[in-house]
Length: 187
Image 1 (cartoon, one colour):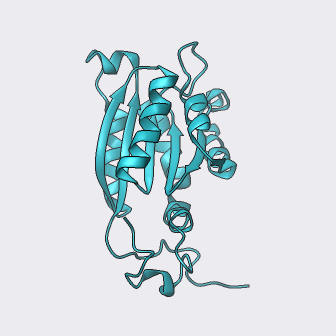
Image 2 (tube, rainbow, N blue to C red):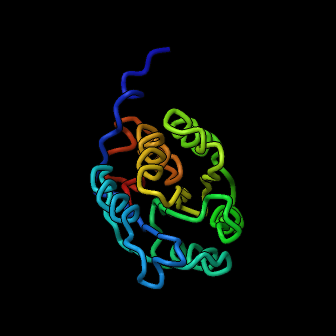
């Protein structure tokens, strides 16, 4: 049952289109630096990814859900990374907005993020990361704290290229057949 390309991220032609959304009341007012958004935007370059849109919103679920739906419709990114609003504070409602926007969940990714966080702090069990698919887009809701966002992204990083290929509907995800520049080429 050996498959040599399972352990290495597949090589794709082009770059995956990525949007980064930071959810923060203080950040949206210009009162807090967006360190986790900066990290996510720089890290996806290695995917290989291209940040096609970056935005900052307050902790308002209706705005978050609307933004996600608009961006998927207008920009069709392969991936949206949301950071912030995943805790237990009364204003933390990013997971609810992401779940309402999504068509279906990818629970294994959220579980992996929390499992990685638990290796570093018992507070990881309080985080409410979620992963969903909306049309051609995988949406991940990560914590807003820089260290937690880093740990969460690294937890799913090895599976991310394959997940993006699958969501994109490549004919044979993680095989050479899916990397020849045909209809499955990253958007």
